[in-house]
Image (tube, rainbow over all chains, first blue to last red; front, top):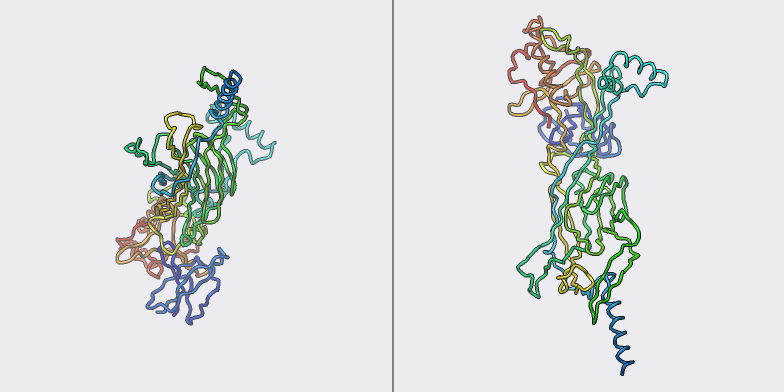
Length: 65
Length: 428
């Protein structure tokens, strides 16, 4: 399982997860969800958009379990 | 010979009239050198307040004219006391089901800067010294720049205050002069002693102006340029009020709606529904303890080499020094800009907080806008086993269509009864 994790004000949360690594730079996600996650290693660092506040890219990390 | 004496006397009078005049800036002026030690600048104090929040309420004045008249008559009958009547008129009524909007990214920042001169009285009569009581800061330009990684931007100038005056700006840039209230000619009487005593009134057609100010603002930088007119020293405190905005990151807050306080039963408050509100909070990966900015000051220092014993400046032999001061200053701290959200959970090896699963199967954090909401919700939660429900039940706890989650699973009454470390804790 792959987890898309954002960190804001020092607090991490998982906003999306997927069986495959489908995450790419420039994709848009709903940044409000807070899904349960347990991660082992970082796969990559990407920049995404939040659909609630479009226009500004934020840094997200893709982890795998 | 007599004609020659008259001519000489005429020249002396002419010299005195043109030489000894208060309209002269100085007797002589030279640029000496750069000296960065003559002036210093600090951020002396600050206040950071949230920009005004909107409450979706209505009061009497939102009604039509006819409805206002009728309601005023009714209120007048019910509240004959003046104070009660005024209170009833201005009372704000919440629209049913509406939730106040909160803004955590827009803030008003008030800064008090202090600009000081180096006052070294030990070199007062030393020819090579660079201080006399008549010295003044004649010109200064300072800027405050916020590093880009904070995602924090200036949006508006609001007010600028010096000891000579105050200007309301309400704009992104400005050019102003701070002036005396009374305009028009300023009369000064000057006594000049030559061979005899000559007395004259000098009418100055110069409006007495204290300061010339320029200001500009951009996303990450504000800049002020001040020039003092004669005898005006720019040392002292200045206040700059600006509006600022953090880049936003979306978060969801939960507002628990309780049954009215008066109707609370013996078992504590009862939750009737959970409302959700999406807000923007400052967007920064980490929450630094202090937000810092770079303060830079360029100045022109007017040192009076001789002539400093008189108040007038026309007899001053002036030496100009320029200087630059650049430093990183703390602007405000973590407690000022972090939203005071609270959650419920445990804090053993790491912080684990409760979440919510909606009827549609989406999972969100369970966060409250303040400690009061969180502690009332917690009180309701730990009171559930006392409300006649079997504490050993493994039924998930639900509020409406929302299911409470903890450690990835639906929260049960059994967990509430046995998880002794559950507590209200700050999110950030």
